Image 1: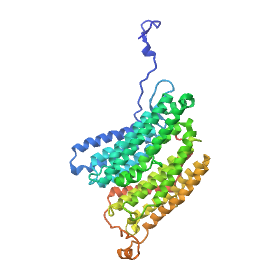
Image 2: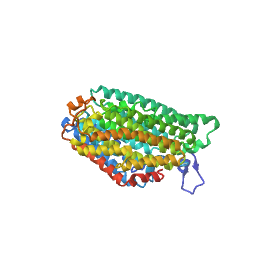
Image 3: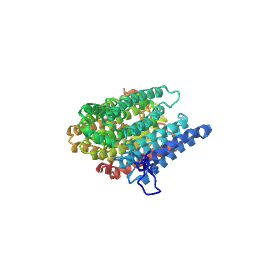
Image 4: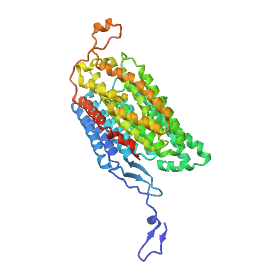
Length: 524
């Protein structure tokens, strides 16, 4: 340590005093939503040790309260101008940024987790309340952290915090062999994805010498020729890792079996929140970290988008209505096809990162209507555990409001009126492809939208058909229908979930600008 002896008498200054501070200040309000969710997860786990069995349902209400509070904490952050965990020297890159992209995605994942918890309140006999609440909140905390991550280390950690509890949630049903097998398949595919992602991240770090996304973007412009191949390989491997997470073909193979084996609320969670997590990471690494290599990832993502939507729709067409769990399997393949549509603006972002807003707008629409469809599936499964598409025949005769809601959700996914928000979201994605000069991808998307109309409209029509009697089914030469759904009391949480998603879907169809405005602005 050296001293500055030329200072005024009585003053003694050291080199440590004049050096730039590397102490990072923490903006607690900026990190409040994921922090509160994580703390609530620990509280639920501890409370489970002391609550008697007949009061375990309180843990479910505690989970709902925590997620609602985390959503409320997004309100004071709506300006989108906060960042924390910043390096205090040089260009001051930050590891956590609460910009508009972060806030919209956090609202989506926390809202999706809230509806998942609501769907699960009446399943306390099958789902252990304490473990379930802890795992759901822990996964939601990681999902909320990921869109705010602005360095590769934080991003990978957030991705795994969101994914690891999800493995356990898929296999949480005790004594269910199908659930355990689905959890194992999900785990193995995710482990491969994580390994590939980490390998790609290590290559990018070796080529650039930094983990901060903005710093990577700056240094990739000036990579030495000897490291150019390493950098490109790192970019490709990182994209492949995230392709697993978003269920992009040909890395989608885990989706149908995982959704079918998981409890219905968890299948809904994976289809919305799990997919959003993957897309958030993919957007951050492509648009923020790798803009210099847009000529590498742009065409690759475009091909993935075309392949994913085609595989998903063709597989959905092949589902038999009388097959056990065919309704969930159809929603699973539909989610694969929807992932293809979500990839289109990401592919178009090579020309302008404003195209990302189209993916965000589409994801918001998809989250609402897909969660609603799974909520109605949970309702039907109470009287028809097989959950075949045929089980929905004549649903309008016994549960007209549920049938109307499901019909509305399916029409939104198909992009047909009165599902105006679904139509507008598809047009926005289509326009993003055209504006970026990806005319061939726009044509592929148009063809796939037409293909998808068949199975969406077929399922919608089944809702309003007259239930077949066993005698008619036997003389008609076809497979016996499941008959009219039996009336039974519907739990209030399940009714609330269906009503919430239906109301939000109708509101967005009446005022689509609430969502579509994100497609017209730069969220970063």
